Amino acid sequence: MPTLLHELVGREADEIAVVDDARSQTWAELDRRTHALIRGLEALGVGHRQHVAIAVTNRIEFLESYIATLRGGFTQTPVKTNWKPAEMSYLFADANSKAVITDVDTAREAAADANLPIIDLDTDFNSWLEAQDPTPVEAGRKGYRIPYTSGTTGAPKGVERTLDVGSTFEEWAHSNALGAKGIGLPRDGLHLMVSQMFHGAPMTFGFGALCGGAPMRIISRWDASRFADLLGEGVTATIMVPTMFRHLLALPEEQRKALDVALAASNLGYVLHGGEACPVELKRRMINWWGPIFTEYYGFTEGGMTLATSQQWLERPGTVGLPIGTLKVHIVDDAGNDLGPNQEGEIYFTRPEGRYFRYLKEDEKTDRAYRADNSFTVGDIGYTDEEGYLFVSGRTADLIVAAGVNIYPAEIEAVLFEISGVADACVAGGPDPERGEQPVAFIVVAKDCDPAEVVASVESVCEAEIAGYKRPRKIVVTDEIPRDPTGKTLRVVLRNKLWEEGQTSLRP
Image (cartoon, rainbow, N blue to C red; front, top):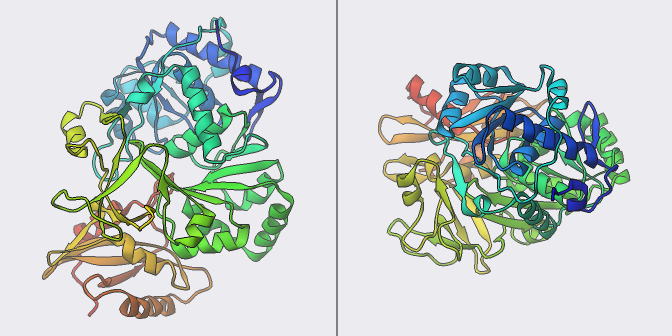
């Protein structure tokens, strides 16, 4: 027997399931179109557990593709739509893709070069879909997602997770709904999708909210100036990244006032955020403005996660919370010894089921990620307090080694973000003829601030609050900090620039 989506999520068939900037769709329509898309993929020759790449911008068709590939028993990967053709080609080949669903030229080009079938959303897609066999597929098919790591520390790696591989679509939807409910995402009102949907965490949580019965409101592109109007549509929850907080705080006074009015009249009661470290002062400003409605997550493609409510964070500023479920956190030193509270080391996670993910076609990298006790790491550095709350200091991949001493950029950035006039910041390692490397601070100066005064303030604060060996040896004023569409800092771009230029001009 086929599963009806509206029954799976506990809604009526004619209720709205999803809305984007162009149209809305009921649960019944979403049901019918996903079945038709499954049949269309089968007609193209895509078989059970074969891979479909989804390179689609924020629109209803992304959600249709996401559900259809899982429901149809295929494997799938949402692909970053800003990738170049060569990057697309790499993933299509690595995942052994059999079809590409897309609305972006780079994916079209890469798929054509690989002779892959293309389902083009901008070329008679609706007519093509209507021509497919509408017969619903049976329940119990086992499709799953193969997410790829961001590639900021090397080539992106596909991650295959044991729990995903073994679950039916119905089990997977139920599990996602329970997870969303467990962290407090509401069932009532709209769940606002402001992030790019190819990003793992927002889509995972957003899909969980949808499976719990919350209709999804998709915006095509983040625009802080639209936020007040969107709240008027009945938004009760959303998922954001800290960069969006900065955009909202930087709105002109008139728009800030309009947003205040909209917030007061709205039912927004839950904001989940993560994806990058949130500076303490930035988080504090948002809580003071919107209230204690923020829940912070720390996680990664491989599957570990911690959560911190606003109350937990206010009691321990800077924490990313406690591990969820049966997950346990270990802090490990360079010799592999477990460390105690307030001792900084590499962050490892352990699950009772042991190894539960592998890197696709990368057995050696998989083995390196795990210790003998099957605890795993992605290379982040941090510590736990006496009650087990986790604090993240940085990543081993971001490490700056100056005269043999380890320096973590995130520690310096935490100071920079609290300096008045600094709108955004990033620290990267540049060459130093004597010390090997040196920390270089890149800052974006807030509007209406004098750059020279802000630089002087940065120098003064850094001298007072940062030990000499960690202090930035150069401060660069820039128009923007490079970030990917998910908001993650592309530190490697700045680092590569410094090394290519052979930066050796140092401030005493």
